[in-house]
Amino acid sequence: MRDLQPICFPGVRTRRPLLIAGPCSAETEEQLLRTARELAAEGVGIFRAGIWKPRTKPGGFEGIGVEGLAWLARVKRETGMYTATEVATRGHVEAALGAGVDLLWIGARTSANPFAMQEIADALRGCDVPVLVKNPVSPDLELWIGALERIYNAGIRRLGAIHRGFTWIDKSLYRNHPMWAIPIELRRRIPGLPLFCDPSHIGGKRELVAPLAQQAMDLGFDGLIVEAHCAPDSAWSDKAQQVTPDAFAYIVRNLIIREMTVTTENLTELRAEIDKLDDQLLELLTRRMRISREIGQYKKEHDMPVLQTQRYEELLARRAAQAVELGMDREFMRTVFQAIHEESIRQQMRILNNR
Image (cartoon, rainbow, N blue to C red; front, side, top):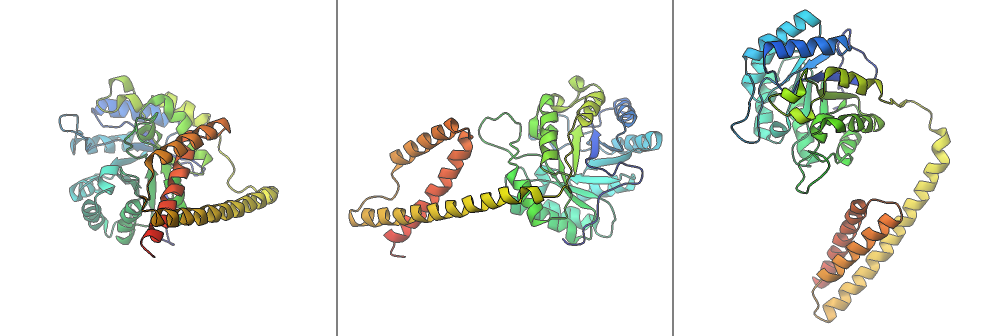
């Protein structure tokens, strides 16, 4: 994707971050217009609202439907804001573009489905409209890239990605676990791809929007897409994660935007030190795996199973506790040692199977 174009609109701020804000759902024409006017007064140039709302379970509010597109058109006429909405089918694409919607995004449930993505891509062929693709609900980078590639192959060059977090089986502070390493790797794989953060869906609570937005800026994200509602406590969907327009403006005003083009000469020595330490880590891991192979040989000679569950659990608990004492995150250290243990098991299995 070497010929991607920037996502920008005449009259909309070009400095980082590009801001997209509006309610989770278009509920009534009055609610939509009131929210849009308040956001426009705060300088927001792109207004978002969900017209079709795919819900996890049936029975909830699933969007006002095509009727809401006329409300978006009125927002555009009366405030001068550009408009954006989510699409999940060919019919959504055709209706949104026919109503003059300026930007489309594709949700997490849809991006996880290659059949749905191809249907949307086919509907977009020959169009020149910016499209943002949210990450799939599962932490699957290849699936995310595949969804982006389908839209790119349809001829869309104003293409971007939205990081909205991932479904996580364990309880967490967040509604959707951020797993920042995945969008960071996406940026490494597709360097010119504009990257937006959706702190509303990651956090699930309005008090988490500000810190998550700041984290995104610290990681070099290009924009934010935030759910803002004129009366969030009365919202018909996702009320807990929506902020008021003035709260959104306060969050934006207090963001620290770090310069992306500052010289790195002063970091050369520190980075050289990191490189040395990485070399030492690799050497230590090589030595550790050599010992693992020796252990594998011993287990083979004495008909012992490779996996020693009790020792593994003791190792994880001990190293995680040590990590906390040394000022590191417990879960980070568990993840590191889980990966090391998996490779150790693989090495021992090779010994047992004479490979």
